[in-house]
Image (cartoon, rainbow over all chains, first blue to last red; front, side):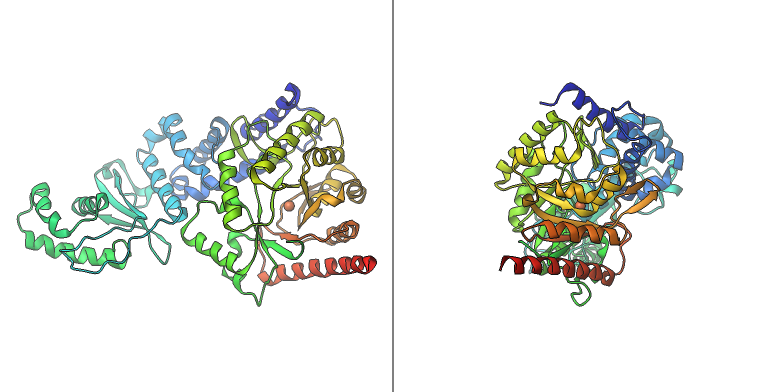
Amino acid sequence: MLKPETLSQQQKLADFCRSNVEPELIGTTDGRLKNYRRLVFSVVQDALGSSYPLSKNLLSTKEWDELCFNFFRDHRCQNPQVWRMPFELIDFTESTHSSLCEKYPWLLELMIFEWKEVEYYMMADLTFPIERSGDFWEDPWRLNPEMEIMALSYPLHMKNARFISRTDVGSYFCIIFRQPGTFKVKFMNVSPFFAWLIESMRLEPSKLRDLVPVMESQFNLTDIPAVKERIRPFFEKLLNEGMIH
Amino acid sequence: MNDGVGIGFRKDFGSAFFDQSVIKPDFVELAPENWIDVGGYWKKQLDKVAEQYPILLHGLSLSIGSPDPIDWKFLGKIKSFIEEWNVPIYSEHLSYSKCDNAHLYDLLPIPFREDAVKHISQRIKEVQDFLGHKLVIEIVSYYTPVAAEMTEVQFINAIQSESDCELLFDINNIYVNGFNHGYNPKEFIEQLDLSRVRYIHMAGHEKISDDLIIDTHGQPIIDPVYDLFEFAIGKLDHQVPILLERDFNIPEMGELQTELERLKSISKRAWKHEHHAEA
Ligand SMILES: [Fe+2]
C-alpha cells in the first residue's frame, strides 16, 4: 500500500502536468519540474493537432490552444494508445464548449469527419467478401466492409471548412472508405438516392433487380430505364474504387 | 534472443528502412501501443518488418509505478501481440504515465521510497504471473527527484530483488541522470545487480542548458555514452541484445547503420575478451 503522502506526491505531479498549476512537492530540483509539463503537454498537443488539422485551422489559434489546454486539464484521457486519444476531444468539445459550437455550427461535424479519416486509415483489417462473378442485375453485390455513409449537414467533404458558412446547411451524403490495395482513405459525395441504394446493400447483400421496385416506390421514380442508365456508371465507379464486389 | 544489435522502428523511417543494403539491424523494437489493433497500410508495414526481423516490444502505457490499478484488458492485448509475433522480450519503464484515471502519455518520476518499492514490486509480480515470464524494467531518465527517501540505485535494487524482474539497462539514461543529478554513472552501474541485465538501450540526447540534458532520442549517440557503454558491457558476464533508439530528427538510414556497426564492434570486442577469459 502506498502511504498517503507518497500517493499525494504522485497525484500532485500528475495534476501539474495536466493543469500547469505549479504544485508543492517535496525535494525537487529548482526549475526542473516545468520540463514535465512541457514534455507531456507537447505530446498531447501534437496528437490533437495531427488528428484535427482542419478543425485546428478553422478555429483561431487562441481558440484551439484554449480547447487543447482545457481538454487536457479537465478531461481524464482514457485511451492507453495516444493516437486513439484525440477521439475523446469530440465529446469534450460538445459537452463543455457550447459557445465554440455555436460560433462554428459545423465544428463538431468536422471533428467527427476528421476522426473518421484517422479511424478508417488505422482500423484493424476487416474480412472482405469473396470476389463476385455474375450478372449485373441478377446477382447480389457485396460492399467493401471498410466503408460507411456519413450524413452531413455541411459540405465538409467538398469545401474548405474555413469557407463554409451557415447558408451551406443542408443534407449531404458522403461515402468514406479505405481503398483496398492503396489503403488510402477516400471520400465520395453521393446523392440521397445513391446513399439509400448503398445503405440498402449494406444492410444485406442485394440484387439490384430486387431493389428496383423499392426505388420506384421510395423515390417516386417512373422512368426506370433512365434510372438504370444512371446506376450502371455509378456501380462501375464503385467497382473501380474497390467499394463493391 | 541473447545478442545482436537492433533498432527501434519508427513509422517515419520510410521505405528506405527495408533496403537491407543500406541498413540491416539484427532485430527491431516496437512500441506495442502504436501497432495493436491497427490494420491497413501500417499492418502491411508491420508484416514486412516481421518478415525481415525478429520483433521485441517496448511498452509505453503499463505505468507500473502508478497508484492506479493496472489495465489488465490492455495488457491482455499486449500478451496476445507477444504471442502472435513470437516476441522474446517485452520491456517497460520504471515510471508512471497514468494517475487519477488519466493517461499522461509520458514518463513521470516515482518517489524513491520504501512504500513505492513494495507497491511496484507487487505489481511487477502480478504482471509477470499474468504474462508467464519476467518483465524487463527500464531505468528511466528523470529531471528531478520527487519526495525521495532513498537513492535511485537503492530504489532500483530493492525493486529488482523484491520483484525478481529483469533489467533494461539504458546507458544513455544513466549518463543523462548522472549529469542531471550530479553523480558518477560508472559508480552507479557498479552498484547495480548486473546479473539481472537482460537488454541494453543506447540513444542520443540534447543538452539544453549548462546543467540539464533532455533525453530526446533525437541526436546521434555521443562519445562519452559510447565510453560508458563499453565500461558497462565490460562488467556484464553475459551477452544481451543492444538497441539503438532514434525517435526524432531521423537521419539517412546509412547514418543509423554506422551507429549500429559501432555498437556491434564495441560489443564484439568486449564479449570476445570475456569468451577468452572463460576458455
Ligand atoms: Fe530506452
